Amino acid sequence: MQQCRNFIVLFLVLITLWGCETNSKKHRVLADFIPKSSQTVLKIKNWETTREDFKKNLLIGELENDPFSPFFTDKNSVFQFLKPSQKALLCYEKTNDGVAQFTFITKISPSLFQIDSLEGIQQTQISFAGKTIQKIQYKEREVFSIQWDSIFMLSTSEGLIKESLEGKTKNEPTFLKALKLKNDEELAYVTQLNEGDTLPIWASWASFELQLLPDGLVGNGVLLEQDSLLQLLSVFKGQVPQKNEAPTIIPVKATKAHSFTFQNMAAFQKNLQKYKKDSLNLDPTFETINEVVEIQMEGQPIVCLKSLDPQITWDYLAKYISEKETFREVPLFEFTEETPFFGGFSPLLTNTSYRIVFQWEDFFVFTQSQTIAEQLIADYQNHTVLASAPFFESANTQLAQASSFTAYSLQGKVEGLFRNFWAERLHACHTSLW
Image (cartoon, rainbow, N blue to C red; front, side, top):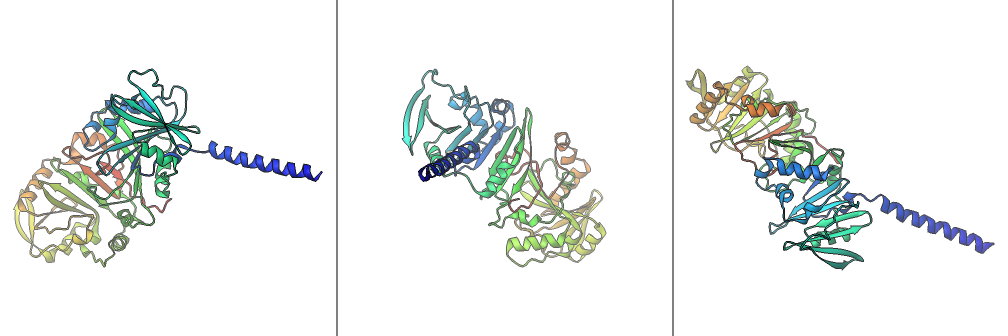
């Protein structure tokens, strides 16, 4: 009788352990297999639709440094023969020697990857960690695949496949949070924000819904900062995004511009001081300001301040300036001493001095030369500004009308899909892994 009870207990233990193992396999998801070194991940709901959209889009193929357009249009790659019936992940990394590596991950399904009948295909098997990696050679290129439980992976790198087999996967909490956002969209773009990008490092990851249109791109998403790092996104903590007026002051001939807004100057100053780890006393002039715009034109920076009360702003500026002359009925003022205003805003603004200031509607415009000031006045009077440009008017309906930070890239000066956050209105949402 005792032996019988012992047998029953042992049987129940074995059933429990077997159930746990089965349950573990059952609940493994695509994200569990993303190689640790991945820098960007596309979450794709319909692979064929996405592939065709990348092929047809006229803009994305012209973007410098964008890796995915060449990937989807490559006719010599075996990736073109993939036919997943479920969601897929496409992971990208650029190695130290500049080589682009891609890893595709999806659930196994019928007709997923049928290449045996293709002319010129050579396949060999590689044993590793108790699993079998398939090495595939096609048109003098090598790729590697593996079937693991219900998961299929195809990669340009044998090393990336091995990373996943060894459990070296992308499991940082901030990344996983970014990956879960935009989960039901047709196409989502999750990318790491790196040192060396043109703008300061705002956060650790960006997660965007991406729409590929025949003549353009539309992105909508958020930035996530990592708790252990003090990143520039933190300066907007506690701020309510304000309406953007920057397009009314940015000339269409500008090469790029960015603006930031705040509704609580004291909180903004405190956050900026914490980020810079230094004492910071912004000039009282900014007590009347709720939007700051920096424009790059002809290689020179221009700063525009939107005032809530222009008369008070003039009162603050009065001790620094004297009237110089008038151009097209717009008074130009010259600084009698070096402008003390903008150094504290670094790295949000270029740390430089300005000679000329004038008012245009609610904006105070600071330039380094009178020539640039006169060009700007002519542009404003002729309505050759971004807000009046037909291409911007059509796109503006799809952009948020209020934000904490906005960046614009003009004249085709775009370096990759999100390299400069081009023409995107990024809601600066502070997060502590929310």
